[in-house]
Image (cartoon, rainbow, N blue to C red; front, side):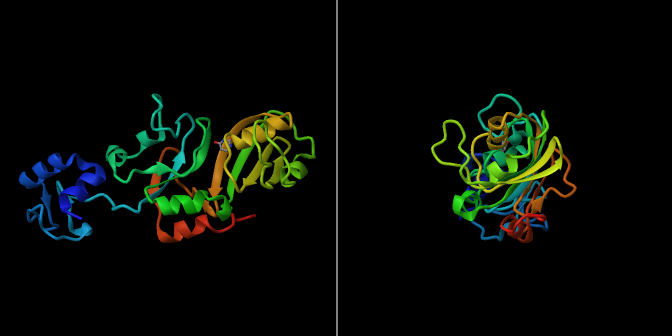
Length: 237
Ligand code: URA
């Protein structure tokens, strides 16, 4: 790919802007030698204003989604994309969330610009486990785990029953729920269907990938071994 297109696609500006950056000598090699738009240079040897070029296409990130941010690009309020470098919003192919979490849900949120990887993670066939911890408004009745695991539970306005889900009771009003699908507001709707109410909700892992010590609002790029963990069963599954 031509350097102007490559750099423009990473969100540094329009092709016209990037052509100007070349003319201004802002695009160099690691020794500060000015590069020209038709040079052939490896990605890792390109500097813009002396800084390494952003990572190439094929990016996958994990964010500790904080409460109060939505996953939609269009919302006028606080959105998760505001927590990424502004250039990342302008990348082509675009970086999108892998599934969504509600505004009032925190925890593991993935982003990628790799359509095939996104499909591999969200495909119902992959059955990637998503583990949530919830606090509830009311004590459990005792039969919720059996219903959630049955594979026959129906949610209002859905045509298909839910896939079996695993409920682990941590305290009378604190649970861990493992899902292998991602329907709209699924955890909240499952508890509402049994007469309860989710007060707080956090996603603690996707597959075996957990947040580790990533603080709320922070993100990091994933490495190959992290990506492999997405497809492994969660630690205490
Ligand atoms: N289930 C919900 O109810 N909300 C989320 O954000 C994720 C799963």
